[in-house]
Length: 305
Image (cartoon, rainbow, N blue to C red; front, side, top):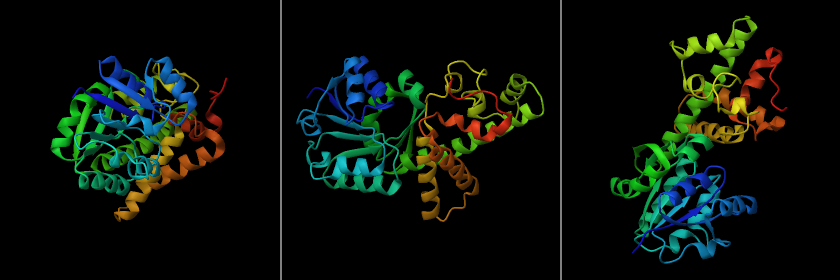
């Protein structure tokens, strides 16, 4: 049987991921509930299927999903017309959504009971990473399922990690993004402190990049404009990775910590800061725009021009 990929969820991240699969020569068809997103997919020459029920046919060999929340993944996989009850036993399921661990395990268990191989494979790297196929992909599932998925994952990402059993991919992603959210706030505080001290921001940034205060937000994704070309801070904070998505991931981390009896005071504080930022209407801005809040009256770069 020739390979055919069905991709569900071609939003800001999913669309370039699907496009990279198409460009690599894979036969692919896609679906999204958003008419705006499907129009963009059509403009990228992706084959769009108008109805989800028509997407899953007997010749589909892999289903990839990129959905907003656990409830969406659960409905798509386990609902009345769920994928698990429609695909063949030889079909591989890859859920790239970032969702709660328990739902991820529940879906994977159902697939396994039906004799279908499945992995959870959330991604990190934002829209730029999806476009350039440099995503970090964290995988949970059996070694056999991981190895089956690896050729496709390598087309969409650069660093592929097998974290462990089903649910481990989402667990690893949640831990990573809790650290990232905290680090972005710390980078914002440090750079804005330098501004209040009347020290040249570019010089402080260069020092931090090469000293012990370095971090991914400092070296790759700085929260202030004028430091690294091509970053959201240099593009009026167009995401990128939105503040709303970071807020969602921090909430997942907080819930996981409670369930695991883990103490995460900085994670909780980061959640409170991002929640307030989103409540104030900034959820569609890049998550690095949190520096606007951190900066206070020391900030003189408007988010909107």
